[in-house]
Length: 548
Image 1 (cartoon, rainbow, N blue to C red):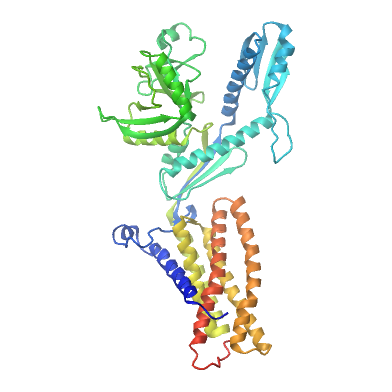
Image 2 (cartoon, one colour):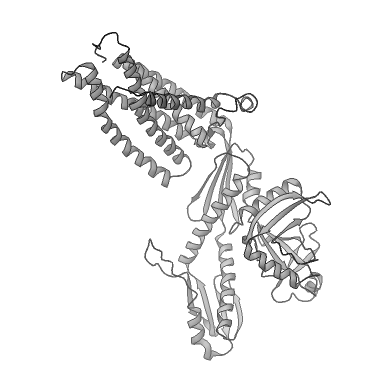
């Protein structure tokens, strides 16, 4: 077992060299990496977490009441569609704060209407859980009204889905502003925690992720202007929105959009070739491209409105909904793409493109807690971690050298390789080092030393049983293997569970610990064994002295 083939020696040497070169970028400045570092060597540095590097911390809360209002609006449309499909006449279809109410023209249709409306509720059960009720309740209200009421269970599920969707949207938006590893996790019923290392300005982060950015395309009323509608009466099914550039100018647009922002597959900032002004180019999916083409064919010579809902309430009442542009359709737009022009700066065009491209937030997110973590705190944490590692390392080295002599030195070299493998791998895969991650590194040192202690004590036991040194060394490595694998496997399972169920720093600890387990097994049974094999081979006689 102490015999190593040339191929195995080459593999161990290559892995160790890779660990050295993958770790080296962390000891030089970014300027050196950009200007002087050889192109054939790894360039990535270890990302530092919020607790080490400093950065922005935001706690956002989703507006569940806004979700309820949007849901009621959708339910109202479904009720209208169902009753019309069943040819049931109705009047007084509207919504209150918590339900949709409809009154029938003919009371003889009540039973049939109830039958049709009871098709709307959806079972909240899933393949992983038994049925837990429905999302809607159909009731007979006072004064002859029929009522469709969202249940609390239904709202809870809807908020859960909205939080999941919002996390993905936020992640897409943040990924456009840098390569740091942000922490974006759900907290409680309707809150999202966002932490971005290295960013000291929370205002920019809030502006980027806090807007719903719902883009939609609406038909403009063909005959009545917004001023005329305000002076008389707004036609049924139409609303008035202000212009984004000039709030005094308004547009009367159809409330139900032709195309929603969900049908956009791409949005990129650019410049108009004629005016050189910043614009946003967009592209629809295939279904929306067909719908938009049909609409523009039928409305040549008429304007349509591009509306942006930022979801920001002013004075606690009115959402910030503005008309970005209201161009006149000169010819059918059949390609499924176009551009939005307006009073954009280069930065605002880029930010809006990011928001549109990443998708709309399902509801408004309100910042209820914000703070920045200064880099000085991170520096103190790193310094404390370095001192802990230094003191612990000196203590471990003294013990290993005192207890195991030459073999203790082999174990210490293996621990150094172990740390290089962990740091190098984390640097190259883009993992983030957090303060708990430093604890994971220190714990890994203890586990690596423990693995070597198990091997060496097994060798001593074999020698006490009368075996010769070479045979004892061989048996010690072989018989300790299963014990080390079993102990590290249980730790690996715990680390994987922490990574799966944990968040932020806990996941950072789990990553460091998992990589440390693989590095420990590699160094204990290949690196340490190779050094011992070389030591045995270099003995001048076939009679090897007792190593321990």
